[in-house]
Amino acid sequence: MPKYRFTCSSCNVEHEKFASPKQEELPCPTCGTSMRREFPMNGSQKVTEIVDSFTGITNEEDQKLKTKDRKTNHFWEVEVPRLVQHYSLQTCLEEGWLVYNDKGELVVGKAPKKR
Image (cartoon, rainbow, N blue to C red; front, side):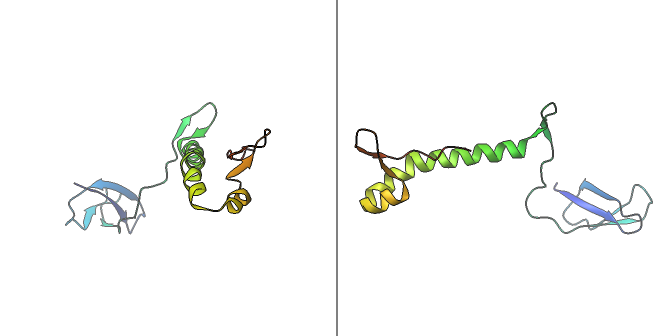
């Protein structure tokens, strides 16, 4: 059975309950009047769980940084070599995909350093 959110119109209490999709109302455990099923929300609710209570790092912030690092690494390791094959030398130099090293050789550039 799916989990639905029910709201009481008299005491404004919200409860999440497992209920049949056909069930529109439930009795309120607080005041006894009927609670109406709310329209389902798209997606999941925001995670507010603290992963490390000592440092206060949440799972969401840490995950965003990891995803950003993976995207940057993928761009420079996979996408840039593909782009170099299809674009002109001038475009590659302007975009920083190709750079000249200390020996004067043309090599694939590196990801910008993190600040």
